[in-house]
Image (cartoon, rainbow, N blue to C red; front, side, top):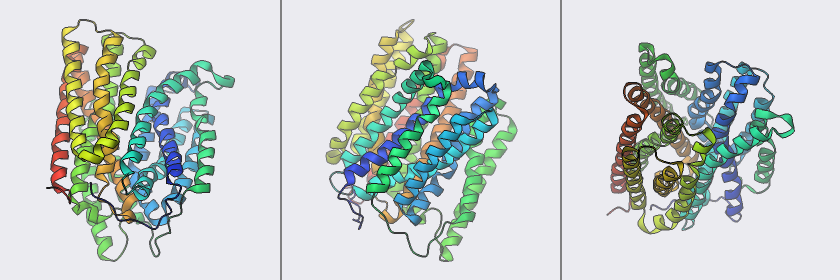
Length: 471
């Protein structure tokens, strides 16, 4: 792996700093899943419409995805510590607002603000890891980051179910938001005490026109992906997405103009000519295209096709999560010796897991929850081998001064891929289910997941050839 240029940042307490920033990442990851469990009770108590319920989930993702590049660049300009503190504090305050919301529209507005503050907080996590771990400990640090990613999803489902069921202090669904507040305060205090200060880059300021143009372009791209199914992919949806693509293309021309004038573009344009970084982004897109959509499709199949109760269907994913965590620990050591090749092995194992799952569904009339859990663990182990080393590999050639920008671009790529996968593979699943059955719909979806992960493996192989030390 390419070794980064060292920085003057204090690394004496970097493992404590790692614990702080991954705790924030864990809080963000849990929040992305915990709300799904509370949606039924939110609908009843706030008398929210189906469209409002979808918006509660979607606007959070839209705000995060469209602003995460800006959040990353703010970290480059003002320092990761300062922006991280602002993001965590803002996330805590907006979580409190979500829990206090008295109507559907107010909750939507609060979730929009919550997603925006997450866009300040989350890029600083990867940027901080990138800055503090440039030696042999890098793989171990990113392995811990990967473990946290895996645990956050499972914890979100379980914690949401426990809080809503227990009805702590009569708070009901509001507890799923209030729980962020004390954790956010503790993380803020700890970060303020020991997180190293990165000096502000003198004479720099945020490219506000670029931020507005990028926000508009990504909004036109991501919004239709999340809401397109609800309007049956009307022609105006495709026109809006085409407009978004045109705006993003215009954004790149605008950024080059800013650079020519001596300004600081919203993204580091040098990253666009970094072959390893760009090929890594393409690979990340294919990986995340088959990430969130996989869990969505499996959940729908288990509830519709196998008629498993929601809680039991959720428990099926626990062995997968455990396998993911174990693989994340193994991947750190293996990546130190085998580099990017361990990611390709992980992709191969994911495809093998999908193949076994397809055979199980095709040959067993009614697979049990236990059998599915066992099969899914194969996929989970392969996914764990890929996720943490992938972010490390993609960012390996990014200069420390552009750590925030690189992390922001990675985050945007992942979110767009997640949304695109949910939209595209979800559309295939529902269309096939309507004509044939949930079983055939799942098999068709599994084939698409396998193709996407195979494309990820091919791009990772291509990325290896671009690495400076590639033979």
